[in-house]
Amino acid sequence: MPFFSHFCRQLQNKVAAAPKENRFPALDKRKVRVIMIKNENTAKRRSYAAFAEIFHFVFVENHLFSQKPLYFELFKETFPMIGDMKTVLSGVQPSGNLTIGNYLGAIRNFTAFPDEYKRFYCVVDLHAITVRQVPAELRRRPYETLALYMACGLDETKNTLFVQSHVPAHAELGWILDCYTMFGELSRMTQFKDKSSKHSENVNAGLFTYPTLMASDILLYQTDVVPVGIDQKQHLELARNIAERFNQVYGDTFTVPDGYISKDTMKIMSLAEPTAKMSKSDPNPNAVVYILDSKDDIIRKFKKAVTDSEAEVRFSEDKPGVSNLITIYRAFTGKSVEEVEAEFRGCGYGDFKLAVGEACADGLAPVRDEFARLMADKAHLEAVMKAGADEAAYYARKTMSKVRRKIGFVN
Ligand code: AQP
Image (cartoon, rainbow, N blue to C red; front, side, top):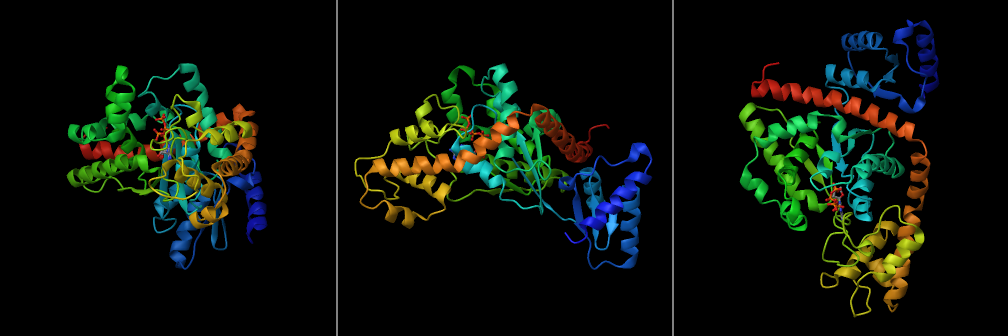
């Protein structure tokens, strides 16, 4: 960045001159946000400069710099023609150890969005209690999930990382949206049918209204894009319907979101039962590869993976086990189906399974190492959670005040 050293000098001068309570925190280059302003007339540039002065931005040539994300957002709100960013949001339940299904179907795609997007990634603990959780585990897992987000490449200074229950507006909007969602719509959700048959002793109302809480997560941040696995497509469609219904009644209130579903890895299947989705709560540990499994465990699980009796590495609907292994191998090597088929032509399944296990274990090794490093600093994880929740709450409040006003609640 050509202006960066100039900026740092200016910022340091400003820090020295500012009254103590207004001082910037210690200069942290990673946290600096930059807005570029081009082709604007002098009057507009003067207003930017005045704004910059009040909110401790530094204005250098065509760039505005800030260390305070909320001021940065306030600026974009005040001058909406600038910084017209699209918003991305997604989340993972802390309902067990995360699997390569969660990784390939969702988390790895979270990192695909460049800095031009405003990105919110949450740990959806409110969703997790639709199924009974052990409190001590539920307390621990948000740290692990957050550390995994970061270990997978989500930079906490560029993404808003937070825990859903730390922003009460999710539950508040969830209730409101319940009142704009039809019983029949929720009854048609296949995840509700699956989960209520798996947990027949606890078919609670939360399991039934899970999709409206998910709609709340999305609509609260005026989300444009939601990266998810294909299993969430039906819930996403419902979120769109709810947004459109609300907008029809009250006028433009919510952004209608789109899904972002990676074609190649939209559904990673169980290794033991390749016609069923790989799920973190699967009671059979050999069916699931966890992101944090050791290399030995990963290879052992792939060696046991269910295939078929043909001994031919070929991608085909009638070969679900082999096709699933090809998908996983491709995801970790970047090879095409044809390349994989050619590579293993004439080989037995033993060699193929070993190669898949090694590619997967090697691909995940940097994530495991970084996870261990991050988990050793719980205070940092807590600071990330807190900063993320503060920032998310700021956006959530804006949507909630609009929603409350439109519905007719007294402020
Ligand atoms: N097997 C999978 N293939 C592709 N994507 C997957 N996802 C989950 N499993 C696969 C995607 O991961 C994101 C987070 O999922 P979640 O934890 O919120 O809920 P889930 O879909 O119910 O995941 P699990 O692992 O099956 O959890 P449990 O066992 O607790 O129900 C979502 O985007 C999902 O699509």
